[in-house]
Structure formats: structure tokens, C-alpha cells
Amino acid sequence: MPSWIKVGTLSDIPSLGSRVVETADGPVAVFRTADDRVFALHDSCPHKQGPLSEGIVHGHQVTCPLHNWVIELETGQAVAPDRGSTACFAVKIEEGFVWLQKDEVIAL
Image 1 (cartoon, rainbow, N blue to C red):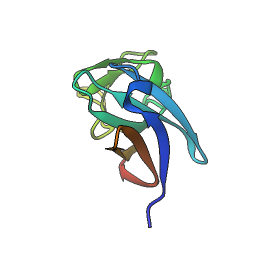
Image 2 (image 1 turned 90 degrees about the vertical axis):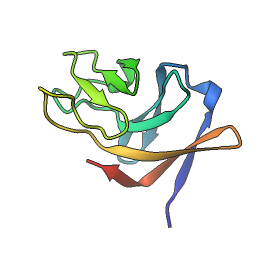
Image 3 (image 1 turned 90 degrees about the horizontal axis):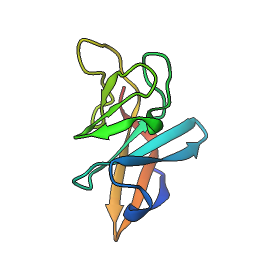
Image 4 (image 1 turned 120 degrees about the vertical axis):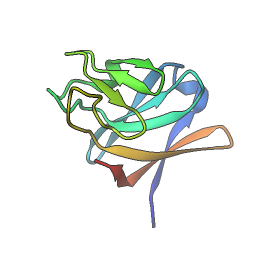
């Protein structure tokens, strides 16, 4: 059975920003887009492991602050011409609270 971690309220995550959740498997960045969708990725760019949580969120993507790689928030995949991916985790919003599913990686 999946295990969920309460991240906080939607308003705890800045619009076009992120919040980092520490897990046993390392930090997970939980992102909020301008249209209030929420996504979660391992907080590490597939290129040089830059902290994606410190990147710029635009649309449903984040740009890594180190070398400007663009990562799709929904899949964790780098946008061409770059190649690679980071782990992507399930999130849900229930009654205004954001939850992160920590047990299962949904994309890699």
C-alpha cells in the first residue's frame, strides 16, 4: 500500500516555485505551476545533479540553475537536444493539502 507524506497546503508552495521534502531516498522538489498544478521530482538534474528546486519554473517545465537544462515536470525527462531524466513522484491535492507518494517512482 502506498505511503503518502503531507507536504503542506498548496499556498505553502510559491506559484512558479518549489518546496523541498527530505525523504529517506534524498530530497524531492515539489513544484507549483502558474495554473496551480503540482509535480514532484528528485531534486537533482540528470546533467550535473544541480538542485532543480532552485531552478526557474515556466509552463510545466523547470530550468536547472547550473547549466540551463530544461526538465519536463510531468515526466522528469530532459527537453531535446539534452537527454536524460530524473525520478518523478506522484502527488495529489486533497482538501487543500498537498501529498507526496514516497514509495513509488512513477517515471525514470
